[in-house]
Amino acid sequence: MNVEEEVGRLQEEIQRLGKIQPDGSYKVTFGVLFNDDRCANIFEALVGTLRAAKKRKIVTYDGELLLQGVHDNVEIILKPPPPPPVVEAAAAAAEATAES
Image (cartoon, rainbow, N blue to C red):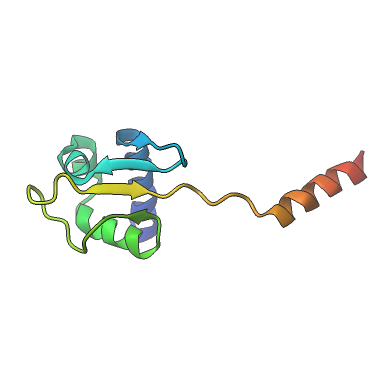
């Protein structure tokens, strides 16, 4: 599995284990992720996958390196997906109207 695939799987697992927030983001603690059996089977290096996702601005959390036990209560936030661009939505609506 390459890094992009692992980051995608991480997003799915955060959505499964986390709680959705009013802004559409998901929040889960590092301890919940680290101690989950399914995550343990998927990710050989959970901390490395989290760092890759943070670098890509998909997740956010305090600190650089998370360690089991010490950082179990650190909140990891999966950012909400960006809203669709207004220009594309308007163009699609105009195209749909033209086809009618």
